[in-house]
Structure formats: structure tokens, C-alpha cells
Length: 260
Length: 260
Image (cartoon, rainbow over all chains, first blue to last red; front, side):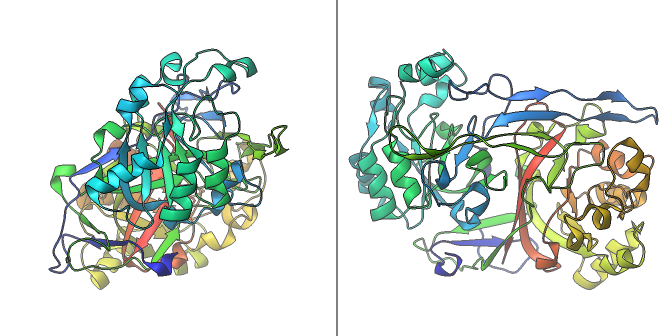
């Protein structure tokens, strides 16, 4: 992948040679914080912060440190392809250049406001392309359902604030149509996808076919992505760096967008 | 900080306009994986991976997911300034542009091979400057002690493989002299510092004065940084994105270097 040079990132120090420069005038944080309000799947307990020491030590200096427990999948996290497809990449195996690339936002917030169970179609992507040109090779595609505005209100964000196995059938949030997932990985061959909901398949999915289609092709998904309303539809670079859990099926990821 | 534009990062898509381009021909991963062998402070239990479900679901598709427990400080992690200084930034408060910047490697591996308790001096930094020019403003300075080659052998890496409070006095690894820490934050005003040992103060430190000096100035430290032997002394960008733990004193961080 590195050799393909499907995108080029040029880093120019201010002190360096006279190449033409474009500035970053904004870094957008696309990750939510982890705390007791962070949204997890109804079957999971959520983030457990264990407050450790805080105070002045016998030696006279201030000190604080903590510990935590968490499922891999909750908050702003990455699904490694192995999460839904055997023998695909674990989170530590995802090539880093798959997680750094030109970003684009496909805005389906009107459709999702009208229908909580909306399935994002191939036509939603081609509508973007009619406006901006074909998806650049190896794009990181961010789907904006608009549901980020509900975070962290579980009832509004997920469709239910109940917990446990019985709550899963009550999940209502939009997601990617499996045909659109196939198109992204087989026709456009994107690097990765992200969405501002808890899952790349919609809440009412019973078979998770978009997960399976993406992960079969080793294409990871970013879920519960924050602040997509702060991004333009194109003209930025996404950098998504996950916690490197050996053999993990996913995990916490810090995602930033560098705007031109 | 963003407005200061002390470094400029120019992102040019292959499909885009005719600006002169420089390619990334290498991304170096500066983070170790988290697993049962990951090195933590002797007083901490270490990384606990809780294997969850793995197999074929009743619906017929493969699925796997896990959970984990960890102290904030272990493996390749960031110290937020509040770790050793009251009322300074927690990990979620560290400005993102402090974690993205021009990187440089100061190699003191010869000195540290000769003396496990070596203290990195201001002169080690000025020797680098004599060779390459003054540290660029807002650099991310990576100190290469060479101890990364011992990872994850605790006895070689830390000086002891014992556990518990009594093991702390037996720690022997190099670290930053407090005067050098003061110089970095008050004279050169760097963005952040990293080191390939478990702590920015040496193992034999009893007062952690380098931690205190750095964190008073809200300058975070990256510890247990991996693969510094794969970097040149200059000519790369560091991107260090930590897990966004609300109120955290530090946490897991994925660090990459983008080489020109």
C-alpha cells in the first residue's frame, strides 16, 4: 500500500525550503471522551474508571494516577476486520497507512432525521460524487447521519436507553445498506469508513451484512465518530490511531481531521 | 497555538492541483502492543486482556469481541501534565496541536550503554544542535537511550524484573536531568518529549524533578516509545494520539512518525 502512493502527504516545516505551502488552520477532534456517560452497546457495562491516588506525596510533590476497564467496542472506537470476519486483521495488524488518508463527509442527516432506520444507499455516495467528483482512491469515508447531536442521550442516539440482551431489538439508528458496503470496498476500494452512530449496520439489522462485507475486504470501520458537523464535505486528512491491543477485535481510537 | 503556525503541514492529494509534492515513503509505528508481556511499573499489575466471545454465531456469521483492564501508565503511554502537577492538563485536555509536530531524535545510546543510570544533559541537546541547527520551535523531542532493544525483558529494560513496592529502589534505566527538562520547556519551549524507557526521570530518581519541571509548563511526556532506532535524527513528523480518558492522568497512546 505504501508503495502505491495513492495519496501524497507533504510535510513542510516553516523553517524549511521554499516549497509552496498550505497551512492547517484547524484540527478537529473526532473522538468523544471516555467516562461514565460514554455510550456502549446495551449488552455492555460501559467504561469503568478506577480513581487511584491523588494528592501530595510524602516527598512533597503532587501526584495522581488511575486505572480503567472497558470493552473494546464502545465510545469512539475502531472495529478491526476480525470483529466480524475470521482470519482478517486484528486491531494491532491494521496497516497504519490505511488509517491516514483523504477524508470526505457524506451527509445523509436529512434522510436520517426523517427515518431513524434509514439505510445509506449507493445513490447517497454517487450524489456526493456528482457534486465533488469521484471518491479519491483510498479515501476515508465518513457518513454523517446527524445522530451525533444526540450524544450521549442513549434513548435519542440509539433508540433505547434500556440495557441487556432484550434491549437490542429496540435499537433504532441508521446504518449502511449492505449493497453500499459492497460498493465501497469492491468498486471504490476505500481505506476505511466511519459513522456517527454506534454501528456501521443500522440498529434494526439482524444479520450485520455491512460489517461482514467490509471486514471480508479488511476494511475497518470507525464507530461513534464525533463532531462530523464541524467538517466540510472534502478537503481534509483523517488520522485515526487506535490503541494497539495485541489480537484485539477493536478498541479505543483517537481520530483527528486536519483541515487544509 | 494553532494561530502561531510554528510548523506547517501541507496535504496534497495526488489528484489535486500542481503544487510541488514530497512523498511519505515510510510510516514508523512508535507504539508497542498491549499484551501480557507489556512493561508496567513494578507496582502495577499490568495489562489484563479478557477474552470474550469468539466463534460462529447462531445466525451463521463469525464474531469476536473482548474487554480489557489497565492502569493509565504502562506500555507506550502518555503522561498528562496533571500526573505530577496539580491543575495542569488532564489527558483529554491536551491540545491536539501539541501532539502533532516536527520530530527529532537525540541519540544518547552510547552514553546509556556505558551507564544505565545516565542523566541526559543540556549538552546532549546542544550537541545535536551543533550538527543540525537549533531545535525547531515546538519540536517533539525524542530521546533515544537505546534501551528499546531490551523490550520487553524487564530485568534488562528496567534493571529489575521484581514486582511490588520494594522493586522500585532497584530500577536502573537512564532519564532526563532536571536541568535539561527546565531548558527544554523554558528555553527551547518544545511541544512534547518522548523517551524509550519507562519514565522521563531515570530509574534511580527519588524526586521526579524532570516530571515536575515539564508538567508545570503543561508539556506532556511519551514513555516506552518504540522503534526509535528506525528514525533519522530529523526530517519527520510525529503524531501522538492518546485515548481520550475524561480527567485521566495519562493513558495509552498510538504514536507514528511520518518520514519525508
